[in-house]
Length: 174
Image 1 (cartoon, rainbow, N blue to C red):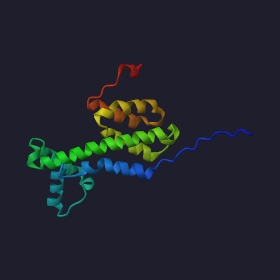
Image 2 (cartoon, helix red, strand yellow; image 1 turned 90 degrees about the vertical axis):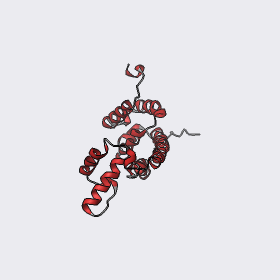
Image 3 (cartoon, one colour; image 1 turned 180 degrees about the vertical axis):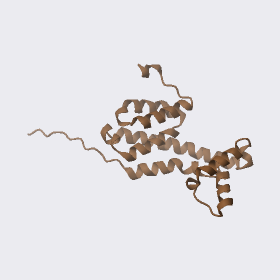
Image 4 (cartoon, rainbow, N blue to C red; image 1 turned 90 degrees about the horizontal axis):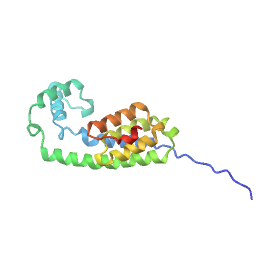
């Protein structure tokens, strides 16, 4: 009997799925009926131009003007709060599902494959919406797989976690 060398077969990254995950991550967030600034920006654009565009295509100048209009008013002046709450609930469910799915992607691939994948680097933005209860799990995984995560992505994710109150354990800094 001869010995056969073991061979690791690297599973290719499914860029189509990662692209879909990014779209899913933004799907509910782009609903102008759930976001007062988006709603007013969309309305301003329509009033001034006579046609509608997708929320992503509304120029930033309209969003800045909309922010000035809504910042001192209750959200209920612009949107249905029950609808907005429903959208926020859907976002939370989607965020958890997508975070767990991206964790699986990281666990299934080696660092080199992940690091060299442009679609993976873009999908890392999904972690910006990680639910609080998964912060430590994502932090531990990113720490463990640090070689696969570009610095800009890692720093952006960790700044976002910190902004929302996550504090790393001191032992991670040693």
